Figure 1 (cartoon, one colour):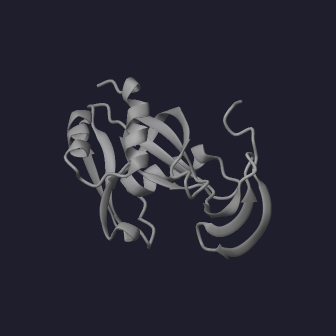
Figure 2: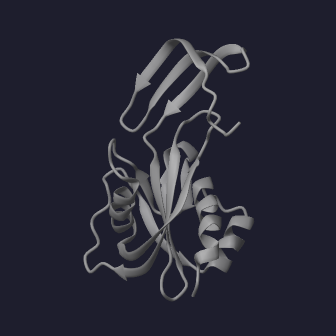
Length: 183
């Protein structure tokens, strides 16, 4: 049977919280196999991510402070998809805001769940090429602390292997984009 065709039956909900970017609930479910229990879930509208690749063979990443990790992580530019917004529109805005680059060519790399054990968030990944540096980059959002970092794919792969904190959506999206990276 194809993935996602069986649906659990909701038996009730005992906790719900709605925040600025996501909501959280605890729901009692009956699984397709008949097992019952409570599951916690973060409900998220999804995120869009770009793998920006310059004409001279550099990946454009950001080193961003992440409160939950209490430190900076290396990431590709990404942002939360607004309710009803096309993820392609989201990432076109985010790449400019976070990196100061715009892209003339976009390739959809697909989407994937980021943490299916506790969240319904999907990441919509794109390869962004034919980059142009904006003359006047837009200012960052007030709640962001971002540094732009350029590196070759080889250096990026070594960075991941070395144990530097790189988030999972970035590593996954890099390997989705890798067959299309031509310098």
